[in-house]
Image (cartoon, rainbow, N blue to C red):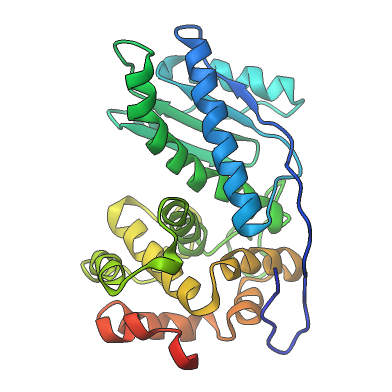
Length: 295
C-alpha cells in the first residue's frame, strides 16, 4: 500500500503478507460440527480475499462466535475470551438487537466477532447453500473492522486528544469502508457501471443525513446511515483506489488525528469532502465521473 501524502511523506510499499493467526471459533452443541465447518469456510474465503486483494492479514487472533442459539452467545464468547487470555466482556450482549429475526446478525469489537442466524430444520447441504454466501459476505464486513483496529493501532481503544470521542472514526468512514469492502467481496467496485453508481447514489440521495452528523462513534444507524456512509466511501474508493480506504486507518494510527490522516490520504479536509459529497449524492453525472481525469 502507498499512502497518498500531502505535505508529509509516508509510504508503505510492497509488503508481502502471509496468513494471519486462526480465530478462536466458538459455537454451540446442536449441529456444532456443521456450524464449525461453515464458519471455518467463511473465514478462509474472507482471509484469502484480504490477502490477495489488499495484502492484509491480522497479526493476532480474535474470537469468532457463530450460533443460531442467541441465548448461549454470552457463554460462548466468555469461553473464547478465556481461551485467548483476554479480559471478559463487561456488559451483557443485547442478543435481541443483534439477532432478532435477522437472516444474519453480526457485530465486531477488538477481541471478537459475533454472528447469529435463524435455526434451520436440518444442518444439511441446503442449509449451507442458503446461509453460506450471506454469512461470508457479512463476515467480510466485520473482518474489515478487525483490520481497522489493527491499522489504526487501536487495540486497546484510544481516545482522540482533540475530539470528545474515540480516535477510530469518523463513524461514517469506519462503517462506510466496511460496507464498500463487503460489496467488493461480492462484486469488485472496479467493475461498477454507471447503473451501479446510480443505485448506490440513490440510496444516499433519499436521506438527509450529513457526514458530519455521523462523525461520533456509533452514530451510523439504520439503512439510511449505512447507505450514506457506503456511498461516501465508494466515491473515495473510485477516485483514490480502494486501498486508500485502508491507508486512511494506517495514517490514523501513525498521526493519531482524524483530520490530518484524512488530508494526508485523500488530499483534502473532511470539511472540503463533505461539501463536495453533497453535490455527488445529488448529481449523477458528478458521481459517475468522480475521479476521472483527476476530477
